[in-house]
Image (cartoon, rainbow, N blue to C red; front, side, top):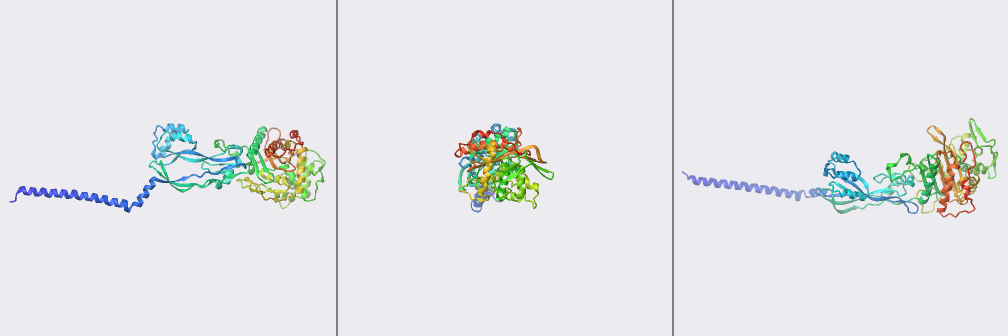
Length: 581
C-alpha cells in the first residue's frame, strides 16, 4: 500500500502548481491584452485618436472683420464700428438653480424666471446668446460674478455719430452688421470686409488657453467717403425740421446739389429716425423720400417748359402771350390763372406763374417737344446714384397728344418726379446746360458731363428765375446778401382715391448765386396745416435760410448790394388753381 502521507503531499504540490500556473496565465493574459491595446492606441489608431483629441481641445474660431467707416467729404465719421462684448452661455455646464443667476439677470436687465427656464429647456445645448453687443464694462461685471458656463467674446457694433441727421442717406445695419438701408445696404459688400479664422486651444470647459495659429487674417471693410458736407446736412436738417414743425406738416424733403459736379451736398427728410435707437424706429420713417417718393412738381416745371419753347426758335425772350380772359377751356376741363393778366412777356409768364400762358405755349410747340426736353435734363429715368429703392417717376409719351395733356405737362401735372430728379433738372439750368451724373460719393476728379441745353437758353431761364425771386412768387426765397433764382410750386397731394381736398405740397426749386450758381436746392413740404400752404409761403423761406448759411459756409463772397429785408416780403398771388407760388 502506498503511503497516505506521501500521497497527500503530492496532491498539495499539484494543486499549488495549478494555482501558480493559473495566476501566471491570467497575469500574462492581462499584460498581453494591455500591450495589444497600447499598440492599438499608439500605433494603429494613433492618427485617429490624435485627431479626436484635437477636436476636443483645439478649435477653429472666426475673427470678425471690422466694417468700413463711412465719412462725409471732409472725413467726419458718419458710421463707425466700435468694439463691444457679447455674452453667451453653455447650458450643459450650468445649473438652472444657481443662486448667482439672479444677480446676472438683474445686471443684464433680463427676466430671471425666463433665463432659468431657458437653461432648463436647452440643457443639452452648448451655445445660447445671453446678451449681444453690450458695453465692455457691463460684460466685465457679468463675468466677475464667476458663474460657470457664462462666456464673453469681442464683436463690433455699428454707431452713427450724426444720428437722425444722416439716417436716410447712410442707413443702418442689423445686429450682425449687414446693411439694411441706405448706403449701408447699397455698398454692403464693400463695407463688410472678410472674416478671418484662427486655431485656438481651449480647456474642456471651452475657456481659451491660448491662440495657436492664424489661418487667415480678417480683411477690414473698405472705407466710403460720401459727397455730403456734414455742416450743410445739419443746416438743412435743422431748417426742414423747423418748417415742418411750424406748419404742422406731414413731412418734408430737402436736396442740395453742387451745381458744377452733381455731387449731393445735403439730403434730408422729415420724419426721420435715430439709427442708434432701434426701439423708436417707425417703418414709415425709414424711406429716403428724396429718392423713393414721387410727386407732381407743378409750377416748378414752368421754367423747363419755357426753355423747351426757346429752343424751338418759335419764341424769343421778347415774345408776348395774351392770357385773357384768365382762363382756358379744353372741353369740360378749365385752366385758370388767379386773375386776368392780359398780355404777358415770357418772363412775366414765369414770374406770375401763369398757367394759361404756359398752356398756350405748349399748344404751339407740342407736348412731345416739352416731354423730350424733360427727358434730356433727367426726368423719367434713374439718376444713376445706385440708391436702394430709387423711384424713376413717370414721364408720359402718348402716341397722340391731347391738348389738355400738352397744357398740363407744361405746368407740371401729368408727370411725376422725385426731389433728386427735380434738383438735377435745375442743375442743368444752373451750370449752363450740362447734365452731370449725380453722385452720393465724393468725386476725386471733375466729372464728364453731357451738354443737353445751350448756354444761351439757360442764361435766359436763369434771368427769369432771378425775376421770380426779386419781384414774383418767390420773394421770400431771397437768401440775404446773395442773389438767387428759382421757382415756386404748389400741387395737390395724391391719395388712394385721387387728389386730396385741401392737402398740398409746397415746393421751391432754385439756385444761388444766380450769375454763377454754386448750389442748387429743392425744398418740398407735405401737407402744411398752418393756413399757409403755397410754395412761396412755406418752402421759399426755407430755401432762403439754407442757401444764405450754406453759401457763407462755402466761403462764397457775399453780394452786398442785395437787401436782406427782401427775404421777408410776402409773395404775390398767382393762380387760383393751387398755384400762388
